[in-house]
Amino acid sequence: QVQLVESGGGLVQAGGSLRLSCAASGRTFSSYFMGWFRQAPGKEREFVAAMRWSGGSTYTADSVTGRFTISRDNAKNTMYLQMNSLKPEDTAVYYCAAYTGSNISYVTLPYHYDYWGQGTQVTVSS
Image: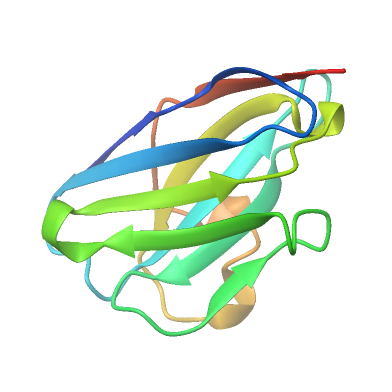
């Protein structure tokens, strides 16, 4: 079992920055993919960014590439999402998630993830 707890959401003006954190605990997850997703009201949950917990390549959605950066701190068992140049359309509940499989093709698909956090609200005002 893996427990994930997000924090760091809030209200920010357009052009501002936020850093989300996802604290992970539970069974060993070093081989897992960790991802960030978001869901705006009335919309489906969408992929934002992902990486393998052990390191290596990162993956980001086209809509956030160049603005958002995913990273992790192994010593703290924490994953981060640094969000810069925020736009009103980035407003959503942001979730972190863990995918225990190994198929890189699945990392952008929320239904392949096995564990989810409770989400943190990000609101960007214009």
